[in-house]
Amino acid sequence: MPDGSGQEDDVPLHIVPLTAGTASLGCWGSVVLSGGSPAILRLARSEDLELPLDVDADITAGVLLLNDELGRLLYLPYAGDSVVSYDLERGEDLFPAIHLRRDADHGMRTAEVRIAPGLGVVHLTEVTLMLFTEECALAWRRDDNFAGWSIEEITHQELVLMAGDWSGREERQTRSLEDGRRTQ
Image 1 (cartoon, rainbow, N blue to C red):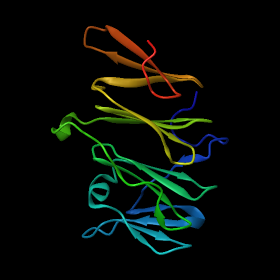
Image 2: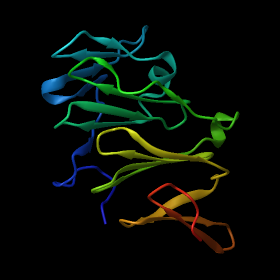
Image 3: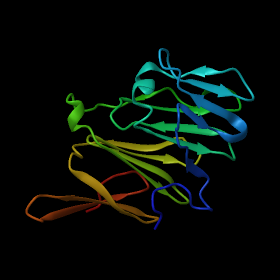
């Protein structure tokens, strides 16, 4: 079972740490936070890109994932409203920004990111469950009330979510990794 760090040797997706206002994208360039203006993707092989303002506002809490082989970058928000992905070679969006329906109270927003080797990455928020491929493309999305749920386990066919309460009672639901539909 992966530890979620994205550092497994056979996984093409890796979490990119953001430190001191910069994230290295290896031979593809870097992400630079500029303070007063939106974050910039400084690209080695194409024109620089300015990140959307809503991504910039959440970038230090969210997760940047890089497929170094393909030169693709995926941003998954923690409390933010948008998922974005870029082709770093061409310097363009892989897909239009995905806008998430989120809880109006920012304090109630949650997110969990889990890398699933051979599949991609699962992103769970309080209202959305999504699977992105290792190529940083959206495989599927399910909108529902996921407040209080967390990812317990990922196999090659299913995803197990778990919710618990103060009394120690636990509840589980199983979802297909093929389409995100609930199976149990």
